[in-house]
Length: 453
Image 1 (cartoon, rainbow, N blue to C red):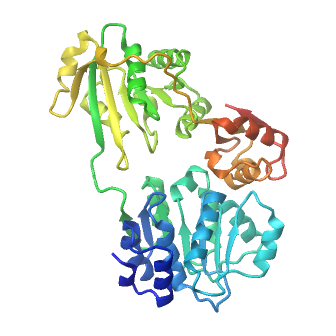
Image 2 (cartoon, rainbow, N blue to C red):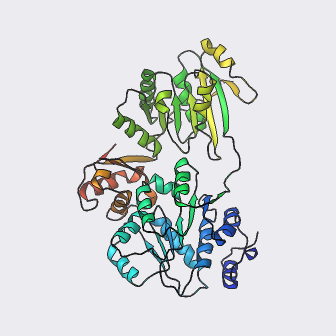
């Protein structure tokens, strides 16, 4: 579908043609007509799908250049994304003179931003923490805001920005157009949509399938060889992350400890853990600081892991319902999942009950043994002894890491803030640098104890 099918100005169409935007991408074709009609939109769209142009063309078309007030606000999770969005908006606005686009992010000096704000702007692009700081200091006003965009909303929630987003919304007019773009449609995202949007048009271009696409394998294992088979499954299929289900707490600890000895990063979760220990484990698994989670069924209830590559039933589950519940955690949001179930000869009768046309029953000896296989995490978790009760926010932590520490936003993963502690996932190669800077530096003008989990 061509852009000329839309009610756009000749100047905009000419510019789109000049910069090589000949035809709309699926997200643009499905969302732009609604955006131009002034409707709220919640869209599932991954990076590189053309979403910036979708909301960018919409807000530039609505913009009143002569009205020199902030009319559009785009919230982004990182400085890098905010810079990228600003750059694309400037390119889309080339043929419209005197449009002022301002980027406000943490990790950069506050003073120069004040100077820029005094000169006014039409469009603000920034990270929630820094935007909120300007709003509270009354150096930024949203009273004339027409359009609010949450870009990569799921990533902002991962980075702990939900509180800041809600506070920013408190400064925005109730009557406005709100666009929400996210790579995943979690319950949290849908809750945000229902609370901040009105009759939002739901757009999903990433995938249309309803059922999870899961390849199910059953392996008969020689007595005492389950752990060896488990390692062979990991080395042959190379999953990003795995939940291994077993039936007892003792077994969970034993499997996790043995895997660690074999240089496979694993943590156990079961009913005997204290709440703080459970938090430590779940935070590390969710933020990619741990690749393998060994869990009992009770402990795994309520786990919300968005992208799970693989599930392994170390023991045959007690009943088909438990089996379905376990394996249903993989293959979500259009991704392909893998599910493995191990059983010994004395469990063959139980395994036979699971036979159908789609499940593959194979011999564990057919798996190739790969010598020297390791599974290391991509991130390491930093723990900061300060949280919500200390008024620590995700934006403060992000600002300290990207400012004084000089880390790129892309090196910082999920941020989880609890009452008295905060957890930050840092790219493996940057952990020492980040630890040193936070240990010797300050967050929000205060010193906090910082340690590596």
